[in-house]
Image (tube, rainbow, N blue to C red):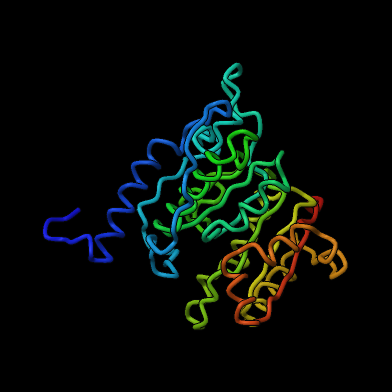
Length: 283
């Protein structure tokens, strides 16, 4: 704590809380939790101590760390439970990605539904990423007896710049874009997470038959995403009947913090899902 700061000052309490959580995070976030060990219940992090601006400029230099290629990524640190000591290799690879995962609600609800899949959240904001890390640490510790939540994690990254640095070609089965920043001003549209150029990168890391899930409460952004996805030759929109029968759509609609906020305000949610088509033959 800085000199002259009082614990009665909200910012001082926030800083002390963050420092304590940071120490705990550095100690536990890469640790393989022993399910036979008995330990005290870990409190879930309190969101009010992780205050940060709602949006972050994706074009800024955020001093991010990223692998030169997917082969250089050390996934053991994020999913230690799935690292095979005998072969010195991961037993699984990430197949589901939540792009701009926010406070991690979708990750946590997807985890028990897809226990055989590794699920990664990517978030550019520092404190939001810290919150999700602390949330996962608490959930893993409190559910160690059943190895709960070992298949999810988060990393701080800019998917608009570095997605192919993390994932191999056709590695992913599902990609989620939940309540992305609408960037209302026309001059900011280039910063939207769905563009023609970015869709080609998403098609590269998504396997044939994989699905892109989108949801927003902003009609203009929904129409923008649908337009660009429909115009792209490697994506085809799935039917409303498909959406109504797909469990991921149901989870996505209600799991995220933004989605819950929309429900409290009785707002609308717009969903569109697209399947990754096979590559056209080269003539």
